[in-house]
Length: 418
Image 1 (tube, rainbow, N blue to C red):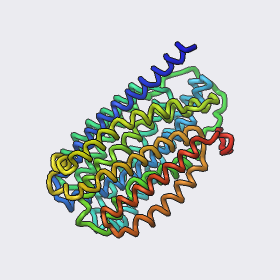
Image 2 (cartoon, helix red, strand yellow):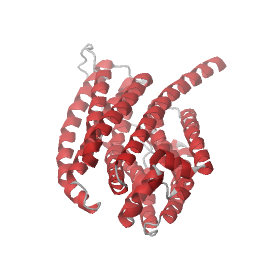
Image 3 (cartoon, rainbow, N blue to C red):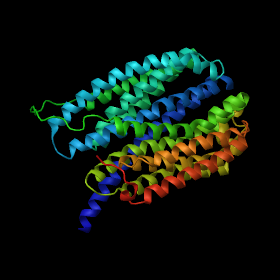
């Protein structure tokens, strides 16, 4: 029995490490792109680019809700070991999502004019192309979710690496055309990554099964996950938006420390690609996934430790080396911002665990925290040190609430696992 547990633990760790390694390389490539862009753009333009990054993740991170909903529904069929039903459901899902993507693209076109003005008279075209990239990334997440649900971590990792490489190439190629060219490069890169993912999840011909599809929709899981991840995305970027709004001259320097600190959250998002299917499958079989949650959290602590050491020993030198001296003026706030993102990274993993196990009420906690937190941060009036201090307190409170929800037995929550 002990041997079987050890084998299972090694398999879990191997899957997590593969995903984590691919995520690390992809994050390094993304950070490298940000560094190159920071050196190619002036501080004002880089502040505008950081706003585009925020828009992308607010639009695209809820696209991760599709991952949650698809994994939850796919595991429903996979545990029944019926490839025919799974294939039929997969085709129907893809057809519906393409239609919805077209509708949201038109909505984004209309909204881009207003949003561009609100952010400080930015380019509406850049905002729209950026939104298209986010919508495409949401569709990419569906294909990745199908890989996740089958626990095909090597294939998933290869897709992460391809996306990172394509982003590096096409975003740099687009940089001579300003922010609009950069986000256009992002759109092309995601298009390549989705083409690759579609090849990996291609449906094989299986014997036809005329049995009716059960629970074909993903609406309930999607709406809950959408709300949860949209709130997490807002918590991640609300400080960037507020500083850009109240203190645009400091937005570029703040974006530099923000880019460094938020790599922790990106790492948590990547590890969520391992944690989500493991949690959903365990839940379908009536078990918990605390072991998988511990593995994901332990792997996340590795980059956390490295970033904290660097920020304490030589923060100004680090920022100067990576972004240049003109972006190194706010180095004094970097450690506090990293700590805030440590808690947000933990909140991200806990949210993935709760969603994967079908628990829904903690979304209300995130909603209250986000609304209250936005008002709390806005009172800093764009002062960077005060904003970061308040952000640290906010993220700590959010994390503790989600931790309590995770440790409570699922029966107390009364959530449905259908």
